[in-house]
Length: 350
Image 1: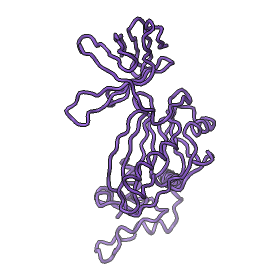
Image 2: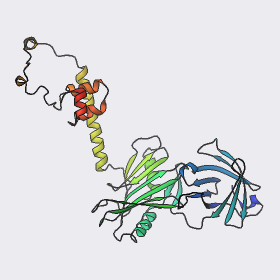
Image 3: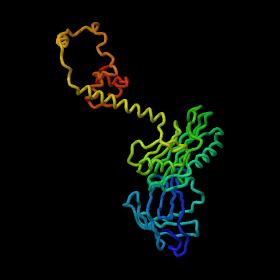
């Protein structure tokens, strides 16, 4: 654990430190290095620099081992000037002194430990503060979409979109614990936001998801833009869980219900096709024997529709050929009645 006593009474490095990275691009990117009381060291900045390590401090040397890539580790001599300035002395082949200044601003959101991973907390306050700042830019600004993802350093990153219905102007805020970046863009004029005025905080809904059997660590979460629910995804899962943002109750919104209906319809069609394909042939009758000798028309006028429209219950030559060749995209387009010109040229049935 990092303590002042470990440095012979000098200032302890616990807390967050920042520095500006050398760059020809302005504004220059910022790197943040946070030391926590449990010995975790987290690095923010460009993705290639992000890391999370276990650290110890003894006799002016930080020893670290990355938990993102255990092959990365080592020792860095450190010195302090008062309580607000710190220097790293990087040896060969870098041979560089890095100067760090203690972060003087408060984190933009809390970091809470839930299920073995840091989860962003007090997001409602962050959303209200961001919208208030947006209204200095557009008085009618509203929140529209909230997304959280886990970065390489296993810390959350928050993305919030705000927009102005009057002219469609929008801005995207990307927020980590110590940095905010903005990207303005043009949205849709008159767009109506479904973003809820209030919602349960993320750590609470993550616990609800875990109680429902989702045991992996949270990988992403979001609200909006067309729903008022929390959508959570956990490690090792494909679809995650949808929870009411006000009550935490499991629910399915309209888009999810439509997706499930379409998914089930496609599989029902595929299964029906397989049953038809592998069903035993029906017993022949006298009529079948006559049809075998029925003359085949050669004049197109005698067969005005050589490729009749495929009905819902007819597997048809087009989808049959697409299925036989393993082209599931074309097969599904045939089933929806949306076969393209290329599909018709390849497989017929149009």
